[in-house]
Image (tube, helix red, strand yellow):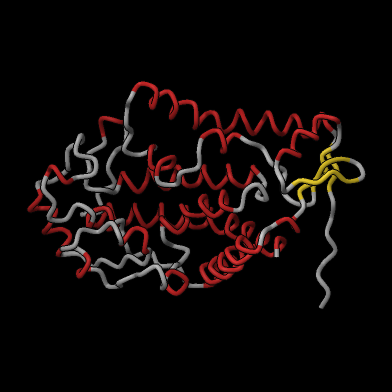
Length: 293
């Protein structure tokens, strides 16, 4: 079956400049506070993760790219030619998917298969955020990642909650931060190699990682998609840390008490809603991979 015809969108200079400005204003609501905290030497246990773990610089997040099959008109569009993925064509400047190098093509193939498998695999909603508890299990106060904030329970009570729970984390990049004592308690033993076999669309971290996959495809990813994935990751991170054993109420994050039946019900309800938000973004990324290939 032949591939569907590609629709080319032409944007006049005033139109794409307005979109560029709107994107900048949108993301600066996230990047400006982060950069102000960094200038003051302040750490934030919730939001720093989105800039440090994912390592996409605020300046890069602010950049606007239209995505494939968009022609930018006007003289100002020539500024995009500083990126090697752009070409000057009749009518303006456009991204050229043919510039994707072979080593990145191999990654896009891998990512396409991962996104497709994750989208099709049944979602699991029984983890209740226990990965964060497994990351502090049997740690001393000095070993805690966010030791400037108190825990909601003494260490022995945290250990009791972890040991009484069925931990079923499927996400390798969460599991690898479990303490050595907590890893044997997990139902799964994820490795880097098993990521395509275990990743599932109910997982908070798998859905948070949509932001990572979006920026790893830059500049081919439409910047609106990167921003949408960041907005989702922000809400996921807030929920993740609210359900953690840390007491972040001083920062305005009321705990989700997953150690109680009511808290677990709240966690699952929120997890399902965020997973539903994630699925269209995953499909947009999947279509982008297919376009690049």
